[in-house]
Amino acid sequence: MHSFTEENYLKTIYAISLRQAGDVSTNALAEVTATKAASVTDMLRKLADKELIHYKKYQGVRLTEEGERLALQIIRRHRLWEVFLVDKLGFGWDAVHDIAEELEHIRSDELTARLDTFLGHPQFDPHGDPIPTQAGLMPETEYRKLSEVNEGEAVRLMGVLEHSTAFLQHLDRCQLTLGCAVTLGEINPFDRSVRVVSEAGLPIFVSHEVARNLLVE
Amino acid sequence: MHSFTEENYLKTIYAISLRQAGDVSTNALAEVTATKAASVTDMLRKLADKELIHYKKYQGVRLTEEGERLALQIIRRHRLWEVFLVDKLGFGWDAVHDIAEELEHIRSDELTARLDTFLGHPQFDPHGDPIPTQAGLMPETEYRKLSEVNEGEAVRLMGVLEHSTAFLQHLDRCQLTLGCAVTLGEINPFDRSVRVVSEAGLPIFVSHEVARNLLVE
DNA sequence: ATAAAAATTTAGGTAAGTCTAAATTTTTAG
DNA sequence: CTAAAAATTTAGACTTACCTAAATTTTTAT
Ligand SMILES: [Mn+2]
Ligand SMILES: [Mn+2]
Ligand SMILES: [Mn+2]
Ligand SMILES: [Mn+2]
Image (cartoon, rainbow over all chains, first blue to last red; front, side, top):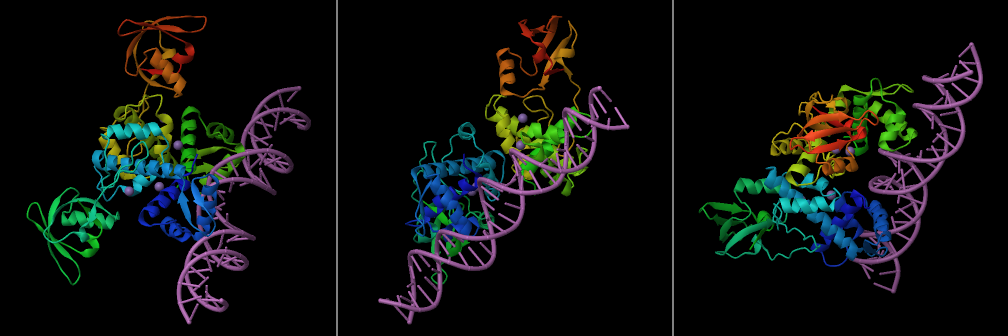
């Protein structure tokens, strides 16, 4: 079996791989896992011994097929638990990530399968992230960032790139909820902030920093 | 914070204390935790340092108030998760203990509180064990063992003393379900096995071994 | 009361996961 | 194309939770 720590490394390697082309560096892992590079190296040797990653000294790492399968399984569990916490227990979407970080490591395939059924086979987690299938496939999404949308276009809020409590609470205060339809007003050329208009006609001012962390379709 | 291992020791000390008068011995703990006495001694020193147990070398241990509070909190979580797994996810009562052993260590008071509400503030887990209150009180129950009931008495099945999968599956096969009413037939003086008659009039033969692990009222 | 038996603790060691400091390799810049 | 900078690995240690073997204390039985 694999330890919590090993599972977290696999998940982190997967997450960094999505953002970057090429292999994942020791320092990148050290930063995300909040450990030191030397500790990362130790773990990489262990994961390579277990054939969960491809690793050549000084050259960075990449998940093997088995490593990716495990990473997706853990991400699936994480996102299913987040749906449970929000939809069934009534947590806010800004409060569920840390709890799901623990729940995702509960080892029981039957638990995952029954939870999935109980939740009605959800496709997305509360932050709009797709839930990997039981078969181990990550559904593709084709969202743009709100910061790349043109003036006058009508779009729908589908997800967030930033998951911090502070960011999600900010969206709550602006009444920017996932699924809501908005129309883009003028983009301010000075700071690239933008005015959007909600279905209800309510105007909302969105900074560029916020706009580039919002996914729309 | 306390590690999973520390939490499991506290729970185990509590459980052994319920069965025995007096302090809990190192060997008793070693047996239940499936470790060696030397390892138990190490942990007892640590728990004593944290003032979670009263410990005098060679004299056995007893939980402090804080230690008991923590033990009850973990038992509460364990039993609430078991209710969730059976009532909401449809697991059999014989399949939930091991998963709850992991879930009980998820650290979030708000999670426990919301789960309790979601489940409708249950008072008993799927095995008939009382769920400690949020205030940290273990509800008292006054059940007798089926093996102590007299011939002709009518009783209701309220709980089990043995929680193994094998035992619970045996009860399933006998159609001995928690809550069902039964009347005691003759007790066989040779092996103390007993015939009980269910509400439906179905006769069921129960060995003494089974009868002394069934709680009734 | 005392010797044998049982229970418990101590001593010394291991594996996982972390650290700091030093050594090594790769990358970047002049 | 080399020398400095950056990245990475190695060396040596620490903590937690466990182990075996040896020492110690308590209990039990003659
Ligand atoms: Mn999350
Ligand atoms: Mn995690
Ligand atoms: Mn249980
Ligand atoms: Mn446990």
